[in-house]
Length: 489
Ligand code: ZN
Image (cartoon, rainbow, N blue to C red):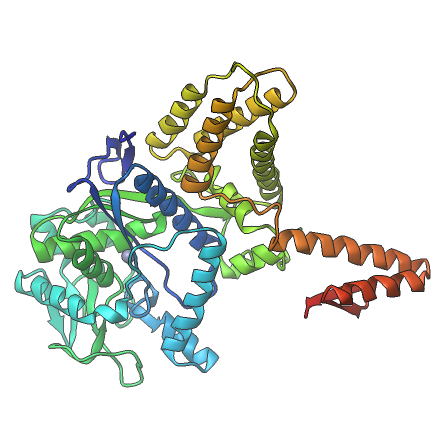
């Protein structure tokens, strides 16, 4: 077992050797999506980063209980406890039940995650299924004196908490500065301080998702679900809590405050945050028109996209960056990633065609150690990938006859790829074989263009012949003004 993993802890702001609280068990909690729109690039990154961690810890023979929650209630339009519930708003716009909205976008998210070869977590709990646990935590915080009730709503008392504990320890925010910068929004006069946050909100009569409670018929505050569900499934102290950098404040800071206030101790040992994604150097936002969903990325149907990008290209692209670095999406960068991914897959194919030599000239164990060293160094996936490309260079060199590999070493290399490329990086070969949607799409594009050429030369017999042959193969062509659409019957 290569158990030397060091991870960067957001609280101590340093790399620490990873020591589970209860080996061989590891508790991992990652904040999942609020399911009210199609999954986009911003969802892909934390899913893939923590999938890498989950896969690597599992490879190191830890027994990981990985929880990724689904927010289906309580996340209001702005993160300061005001505005409409995001899911209820969508339900109104689409004339659906709130839970239909949740199911629709959850299905989309999970399908996209499967396409990206992201493993299912051990448990995917929903906020609406844990109202009892959330109310229990609110009661405990109230009993300890760190919350107050106003008109049926319950708010966390940040100033009171900060007298004994440290509010801001994760994000480095200072309370005095927050006091000056937090806007006092209309309707927030119930709060003693603008930075106090809702644990329970009284529902207005038109609000749909509401539950009875000792305080009012209402719904939980957004931050509460992660405290309540992590404690329920991972215990009062657990190993790793992850999520996107944008969740560090206020979401995770509030989680720490709630759990500490309720239990009298901190629950999380290591905090890990993945950095954000930009598009052509700009923040991704619906208002900027650069908001790209994963389905659009896979189909190429977005004004900013020059082509479609396969799920494995996206996965490879994200793994090329360290999880703590920002990543900038552009067509050029994605096309380079597509090339890199294909080169890696081709190298693995070349290995399968190698004829063994009697002797070997390549030091495989040192390459394997380098792979482990890269991952042990705070999950350094870019260094791991560059080491794997060193291996590919050696294989190509052996294929050209400049290096030699014996049968045992060829098997070791096959094993090395199977561990690091397939099992840990989660990259699979989609460049060949049946069921490759990307390949079919590319081939159909070529066939349709050839038929267009024939038509422009008025070679009608040939163009009809192509259509008939495709029909026999179960593919129907529909002519358009410029080109054609195709459909599998
Ligand atoms: Zn959360």
